[in-house]
Image (cartoon, rainbow, N blue to C red; front, top):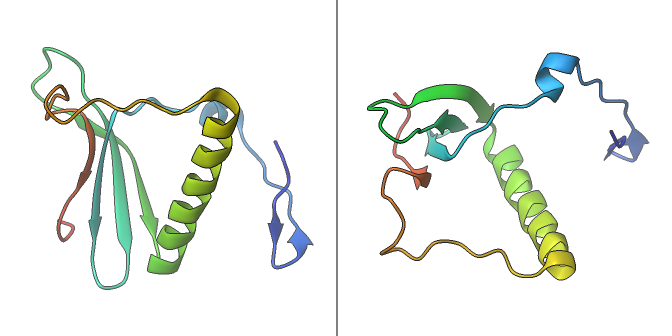
Length: 106
């Protein structure tokens, strides 16, 4: 794992084995309040009536914007190297899968 620079200082990030295995999510529900953004990552499976939240990440507005910028930069690097990422068209995309912007958190 690379060691990020924070405020000009290099920090060590530890990743334990269980967290390092990651989780799979194919649906993210994003909601916000006046002071935080909440990202709920879920996994929808065909034939299953419910999606359970696999992970919830709570961010400050500043960190949410930083995450957006980091994702945009990484997607650009990926597409420069491997080509454009194709996303399903709106009419072909199942309305049960993807990323959704919600309202206020529960």
